[in-house]
Image 1 (spheres, rainbow, N blue to C red):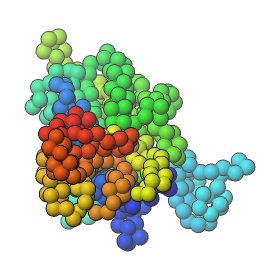
Image 2 (cartoon, rainbow, N blue to C red):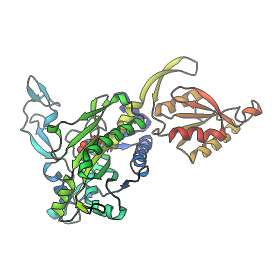
Image 3 (cartoon, rainbow, N blue to C red):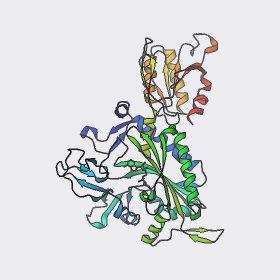
Image 4 (cartoon, rainbow, N blue to C red):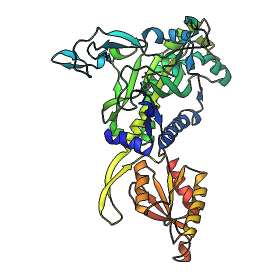
Length: 444
Ligand code: GAP
């Protein structure tokens, strides 16, 4: 994991937030490449879940949330983790994550055994709305994106005129005051979720749970996650929320252990019923054909953006060997991102930076590709080094403009370039006019 964390910082995927002030625990900033990777993930999720389907529409709800909504959802009263204090070093610890030595719980920081009784700690961040400081001005930063979907169910239904089953999807920030943020970005205090609430008739719930589990596994395969490192946990009755009739966790084998990426849960009609009770408003559905009025049930695939980005990075990291400038084999770090997810799709290199014809042609090729994909132009250093730099950030294709391209080695090779594949390191000669289609077909 250290190698991955170090690469993330060195190459600009992920930085600790407020680093120059000593860092903010459990909060992260995404650098230039991390931002591209994260955007590619979110855009692909949105395409598959919303744009490619007729039965899902989107929502972008607010982060600041009415306390009544989170009281109704149960978050105000029960969204807690058990917390203990270490009386020796004053650390605050999650009671269910304490190490045990000879049957006694210990503080992981100082080894102290003088711990307080466990007590519930609410994970929500509370804030104040407006100038007056009184209980009526309390608002919360949302702990999940899901609740705004339930609260806006009726408005979205009215404007979209969808028939059951149909879904409302959302990507956005969520906040949890985790007692022990850890494992790099895995458990953060500020993170993003990609959630779908798929509403249905009660009798469709269990079948749709199985359907969405399959769809979601397919998604992870499509973004290049190795299927062998994905696992499905059928969450047993005792560990499921009391209102859920079935929950599957999709887990990934991170270097620090097998951990949850996404939960796919059949939540019955619990959330809508809670909001009906608390708000006094009707949040039901009228079936034109059967003339029935009822509260829909819901199946929820809920994925973490940051956890999936971390899984993409861990899954892509590889080391192999490649010849250096003198032909001596050296270790090559290569991020084997699926081209669909790679932050930069293609790098463009003039073979030599002091040959004007090569540089001018390379700039033209960059301009040609730019309107179709994220490209990077690099003329600095030996070509082998430039390839290595791109391998390390997972750029799947490299285009080199050489003397053949500008017609110095015969007319038949004019306007052709070498196209290098990151994984095989093989190069093929491709006509510039075919470049866009050749690369685009692999990154879509
Ligand atoms: N609406 C259901 C819900 O929020 P959850 O299992 O609490 O369910 C869903 O969260 C997903 O959100 C998790 O599978 C995980 O990917 C992500 N997530 C939850 N807490 C997180 C945290 N502290 N840091 C990063 N991601 C988190």
